[in-house]
Figure 1 (tube, helix red, strand yellow):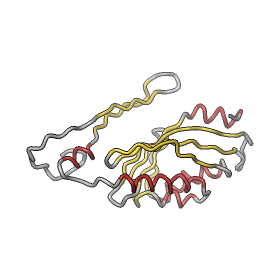
Figure 2 (cartoon, one colour; figure 1 turned 180 degrees about the vertical axis):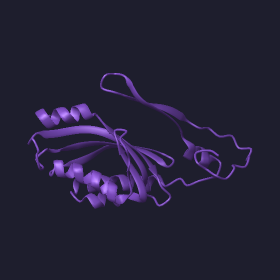
Figure 3 (cartoon, one colour; figure 1 turned 180 degrees about the horizontal axis):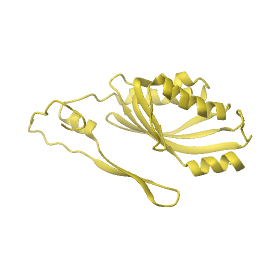
Figure 4 (cartoon, helix red, strand yellow; figure 1 turned 45 degrees about the vertical axis):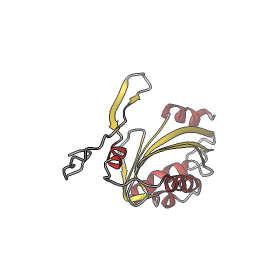
Length: 186
């Protein structure tokens, strides 16, 4: 089985080009915190005539709506852009699974930054994957807030489901810079 596929893949005689990468997460101390090896199985399956590959225009539209949803202060609108059993992980933390859990993560950011806006800095699409780059700006004026301005950039690696929604998002930003800005501002 390849990438969780239970059924065997029949030989097609087609040449396939698959791209792989190692993702390395460094701790603030400089030590390696996590290593993950990935291969673009979606592209490989597509070349073989297997699996789902969404239209890039649909992913671009999803990214635009996602950007607006984060700035809406309505956490369920963010969660609605995930598949029913979608997953959101922030900085390699335990994933929030399902729309209610994803809405709770979004609500945490929205409560801390009631004037939060998200700017899409870029979108790179490859088969059923996308890298969504963003900048978040706002003031930490929520309950217990410091009143300090925040401006932080990061990215999310998405896997798009057959329903055209986000099946999995792994988001990353500099948590040390986030903490510094909470205490001292931008």
